[in-house]
Image (cartoon, rainbow, N blue to C red; front, side, top):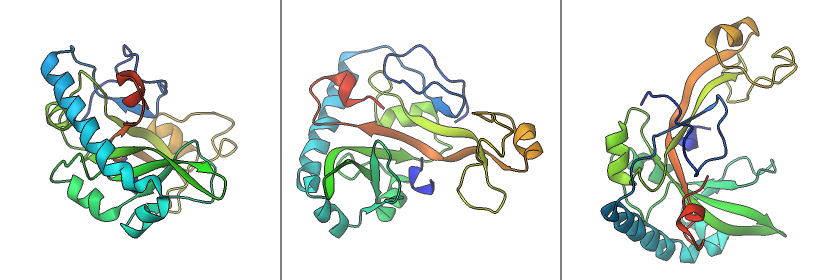
Length: 204
């Protein structure tokens, strides 16, 4: 979870980009489209596409310091995270050096789908916009989480939460014996540079 390094503000529900609108996701607001932002986003995608070409072989990615998070699980996307690049993302943005690579399982290996950029949790939306234009895409953060009380990053089970699917408030989490975390990690954004349309490229 800390590799998801995955600004206060309400979740903006008026956007075509995202599907995850639950209480555990926070999104930046989608701004008005403009030509300058579209051009900047295009350059980011072109740079990323070129940088990712060699990582179509996941073994090359691992040689460059990317390691799969929770390989024992079966998620939709496998995140191969790079600790060094995550640290660098705290102080600068380089579109050619994403914090994580996104793969899907393919036989005995992995097929490259895209990448993930990260940013510090205390960044303002204006600062995030300087990295990736908010008229094209939205950064997201994981919020209102209820973890096991042992200090681990394991979420409380539905049984522990009294059958509830979600746990939103700190008091609810504490009553269930859990450890409430307002926001886990920082901001993040997924990019799929090999897709054919802007909406698909910047979807989550």
